[in-house]
Image (tube, rainbow, N blue to C red; front, top):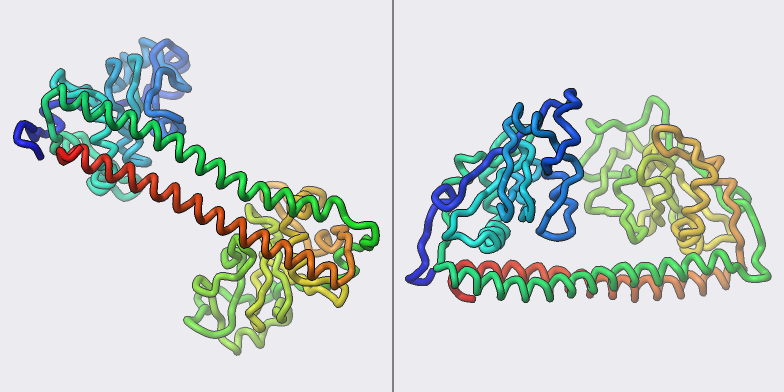
Length: 400
């Protein structure tokens, strides 16, 4: 820290204001003119400035609760669920009890304070206590040391960070769009294959060209207490990776004795497993390289016959076309749900086995290229986050 910088506690340079919530059962407390923000709303803000809120409270609600109006250009910090969201209010505003309002003294620029708190979010989070919801108390917040350069220096640092971060925001937006576009190109090609089927492709129901086998849902169904560190793979939906492989690292295992007691749901090489219920309905994987294992009740085994290539079938089921078929047969009410008999009714257009293999190989290549692009854009996003973190560190150690 430079010699002309001071170090003061947050409580010395800010008025730390707790929030509050008027009783929700009193209509007169709500729908007034006073802005009122919560951590959940803060987390959805596209920028660090906020000039309006989803909900407002009345004069009466403000008076009869612990909520207080913060002056414009205060810094609002979410102090629980989660700790670390930050915004600057450009108009007077109150908060609920999950926030702390920081009203900076004249010697402290509000944007300098905002950037400094952004640089120590991990530390702020570590100071939280509590069993159900970890919360950062006003007392601990007031004790946090803040570097205080002369006000012109604060303004210079803020100017630099504003300009650089504006560029980072644009670069991140471009990288995120490129990431979406890379995936969209693959999805578009995948969808086109199964919607513009060739003239010689034969229409079939999945049940005509594949066998379906549910897991054993009887008395021998394994429970968690019967899992072992190594043995026969016991496959559930959580083991299906986004790329259609099975996560061996996260796999559950059962003993050979338990496996032998199961009457159905045992995989063979070349099988696919398909999720029948819940939020991951339609999630699919090819079981290879596994040649032995059993499936949980949330999955069904789809075993391709001689007319269907496993990889071609995988791409069919995971394509936008295949995923749209789910809506035709989903029979769940509260929870999305399919039966194996419904999946067997899916109509699939089938080229010759040789053509299927060519299509699958082309899609394998396109998917690999897409994944390479996605990895490149993800690394770019990680690098931009690291750059932002580095700049903040340099700014508040006097190196900017």
